[in-house]
Image (tube, rainbow, N blue to C red; front, side):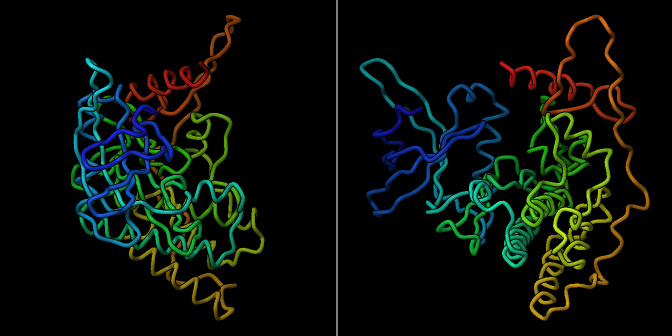
Length: 357
C-alpha cells in the first residue's frame, strides 16, 4: 500500500509508512485542521473480502474507544475511504486513526537491551498491569500482549502505551484462542496454556501474557524457546517453566515468586486480577528499594499447580516411507489425547507450509 503516501484518507494526509503487521499497515499522517500528526492504521486490502477480519478490525476501534487510560493507545477516528488512482481505478480502504506516539516498540528496544534492570522491568510490568486492569474493568481481554504491541514513548521504558486491541473481545463472549474459522489468534510465545488448548480466554490469560513479557525482560529469554511454533506450543503445554533464577541468578526470590505465580499453568492459581498482579509488583518494587527482596513475598502463594489441566501429548511418529516429515506451526494439535479441535492442527500445518514458501 505504498501508493497511499501522498494521498488523503478522509481528513488525514498520509506522509510515511511506520510499519506493518499481519492485518494492517500503520502510517504517519497529518491532520491540517488541528495541526497535529496522527497514526493511521490501514487494513490490508486483500483482507477486506473477509467479513470476519473486517469485523475484527472494526472491533479494535470499538474496544479502544471504551478505554481511557494513559497506557492505552487512543482511537481518534475511524472510517472507510475510496481512493482514486488514475481516471478509472478506485480502492476502498478501512482505517483507524490513533494518537501518534514518538518512540519505538518494546520488541525493538529489546534487540539492543537484552536484559533490563529489575527496577525497569518491574516498572514496565506495573504499567501493563495498570492498563489491563482498566480493560478488564470494562469486561475486555486483550489476548495478544507481546513486546511488539507495546510502544515506548520517546524510546524510553519509563512510559509505555499498549496497542493493537484487534484481538480484544468482551470477557463474557467466552471466546477461545481460536477464531470462528479455527485459526489461532495471539502470539504463541506469550500465549497462555489455556489459549493454546482452545479454551476461553479470561483476564487470567492476559495476566499470563504479562508474566511472559516480564520473564523475558528479567532473564533475557521468553519462558519457552523452540525452533518451530508447534514445538514451542508443545513445550508450553507439557514442560515445567524454567525457574527464572536459573537464567538470572541476580533475580531476587521475591521477584521470582511473583513471576511463577503469574505464569502458573492453571488459570485459577494465578493472580485473581490485573490489579492484584499490580499490587504484587508494587510489593517487589518496595522490597527492592528497602533491600528486602531476597525473601519471597508471603502473599504470592504457591506457584505449583495442585490440579494441572490435561497436557498435550507428542504426535505419533510418522511412517518411515522416506518422505520428509512436515514441520508443524503456528496453531496446534490433532488427536493428542485432549479435548482440542482437529481444525487447529490443520491450520498449524497449513501455516507452517506457508512459512516455508
